[in-house]
Length: 495
Image 1 (cartoon, one colour):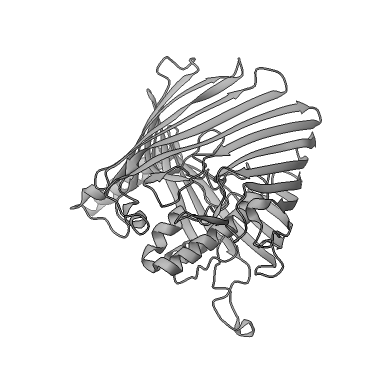
Image 2 (tube, rainbow, N blue to C red; image 1 turned 60 degrees about the horizontal axis):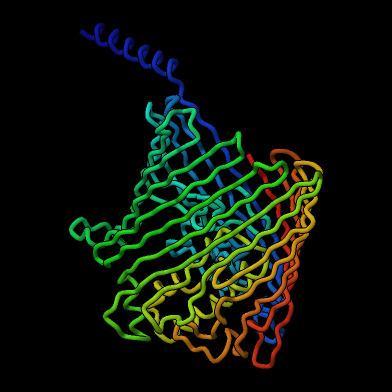
């Protein structure tokens, strides 16, 4: 009996070996390591308030493994280690007592995240995304926690790669999603259709199967046209946001088009329309204006971009619009939802100054209303560098790209507010601007210059400089606003 057992075991091992030989599992590793040196002068717009000068170093390691157990199945993951941590960050109060870095800092100066918090722990090492792509005879099925990107990225931006001309993508939109994409009229047809479902909210801290009414779900329908021969592609991202407990019913419609039919000329446009109603914000708004009425939502963001290449030069013109909210929390309507945080426009105006002052409003209101409202305010007040309540014009009259590995860009940015940014827009205090000065709508002008050089497929360096001259929307009570200077040095190793 023992002999037969040995023979059977040998046959099983041989069969396993044949199976592995017939269907080898393929594993690939991609990713990058980036380090940024950042310096800002007069970011607070004055020499009398902190921060006057800010300088720090920041790094991230991203691993992107890909596993293919069979030819029709691919499993992807994104793992970040020491994610955008500030070099030398410490949790001690006396600098001379510092030893090992253990305080991970925020993406922007002023945020405090230690290694004792969930967010701080995820900065050490965090598995951000894991999803599978399965090819079927009828189309491709994507399932898991995956990146989400659409069009130019003003609504859905995956934050992957290095798409931004200035700054970095720090966030990235991630969805728990099931998505099926197909070509209903055949493989040769330029028409694609995607149908999907996102589970957005189950519970804050735990899963409770007995209270499904707290769920928030997204239902997706995305028709897309891609005709490379005629140089036209585009489609419509449509999402229905449904939440029974909060009586949430929101429709999101985002058309996008890219036309490159004329040689050397590329035109792109995207607009997001968000409309609906919800009770999700009733509690915070009742602090200012009690009412039984649900909150209505009506926000619009849009971008048009044109690029013309006259080898080795490129000329870029971009116009953007992000609707503003005149009444803050005084009414039951939300009219402003910022563009995506990873859609960067310029180096300073929105990405740095806007992020800093919206954070100050958040800090002031949290102190007044108490920490009980801290989390919900954190979701609706700080912009984290996103374009909000603005119309802007971005022009790069000189973008020199003689070879694929080198680019140098000089650009100008002008921004104007839709409504004057109040000092306390949450309550609608419309007597002063955000710095206590007179009301104004002119954000100001910005001049940026960036040069990037890719030594090979693995290593690149970049230098970014920016000067921002604030307008009357950001002047203090004395009519003053210091010009801001910013510099970033980028080192990136890809693999």
